[in-house]
Image (cartoon, rainbow over all chains, first blue to last red; front, side, top):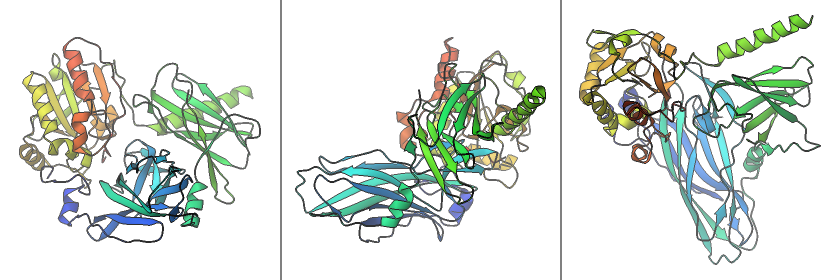
Length: 292
Length: 202
């Protein structure tokens, strides 16, 4: 069965192959939206992927935000930039036109999920929009611009299937920006972690403690919030257990304990994302913590 | 009062550790001993292989990350390199009955033959006890044990976590680097890495 596999994309299990797993590609075009590519399993559309922009037009020298929009079938999930115990992050290999620049992918707050075998993973269900700022050159001389790229991901339920999709987005060049997908971009922009720099006036304060077998992140912030931490270990030789949050005895603080299965003796902190949830509204917000 | 509080805190933290991960054996310490039956009904005891290096490979043949290496013929090539050198390569299947990648003895032999596998034996661990003792999280999770029975490598098969066979030649094959280093009497520089793949279907 292993040898019969011709392409990595979309062929996960022998059983599923018998169901006739194929990659189907559909084409739809909308304002500010690029071609739609899909990963299917039999009749089930597992993942659709599309490159979209928050403006249907491009103005020379004015940045816009573009987004890689993935929609997952119910029950299936894709992965955050650090996937946890298993899985792979979503990737986008984007070809930029001459003299364009862009930021790296910006990742909305992930969910903590459990896969069989007590694996803890971090990722997305239903849909996610990964954002990038795009900077066109001031001397842009073209009537339209086309962005092309290849997105890759792993999508899992009880089993995992790698998928990939070609994305393309055509933008007309004009004098004014033409807002598009306003609600979608706003919803996911709100889910981007903000940098936490340890300056006065920030809503939460953090400090780190190192024990022989764990790192402890002390969080001081509004007592009504609940806290969670998603690590972003900088090296593949750092192996982490599952972060667990408990309320400190004074109730003003929360403590996140991150077991270290393998780490340098002098590792005193970890980059990652601290997430606070307001149990009343269910709203989540997050802060990016920086490493050593 | 104070002592009560501390005891409570300790109880909490040990709970967190217990739920955090399945036990992982420590690199540099003796590997957990085990006895398993292979796909031909023969029994193998890890202690039988003292004097040889032993590579352990966790297998779920339907996992895309495993297929990446078998489809390219790379896993078989590494198996052959190790067994041709007089060392031991044990493939372990911990997929439970009814779960993806579960192999009956006959199916295990069919998989081995159709892939031209060059391992020493394919061991069946359907209750998952050996997988859990080693902390095997994913397929393919890899381990190397030295001739003295000491675990010298625990982690990823190579340095590029992906399901794309084109990445194999660009990656550093951590498991083979560790095996080669130990054979040549050098220390294993990357002795623990983050294994990638599909979760083991316990």
